[in-house]
Length: 251
Image (cartoon, rainbow, N blue to C red):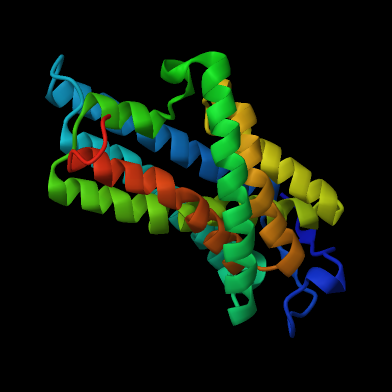
């Protein structure tokens, strides 16, 4: 694979970053996405072999939810370390205090838009079809207290970091270096983010979720703002997991 020259405009290049060649590109996202999907499939297969016909246990819910994105994000960072300039330069994995305000503001806007879109979408397709993969897991397996708190913290804080590294970090950087314009990169990463969740009925809803998060990355040029926007957007779904586990709200 030939080197890919960094063609990002100066406005989106972190201060002090020199023009360098990178030995990673779109194929790197394909590798990371394969790690994400195949690790989830492997965990499910192992669980079925160890406990055939016994349903989804709490450890499987936790491992199956957390390990694939953590592993995929780690591979994404490793790609930049081994074949690029590291995650700070290659993925825009930096932040400033101003990014907190941008991320919170766009995250809250996204939260309102997502809540409205989710309500309308549920009315159209029905409650059963509108549930996310995580929501269905929680419905089928009530989590004990410690597991629910762990899931709450992961869905709210850690999961968004992993997804942003993969989509608005690695994929975003690869598309920029392939000489796509900033707005085209925003559109493509938002669409791919929605489609790659592999939940066809929820793709349009995931597009709504991805727009303000992508805008945070677009406006600041840094991943910190989009991570915060994603965390704000994930707070209510994460809180629902916690409230269901402690019988505060019905599943």
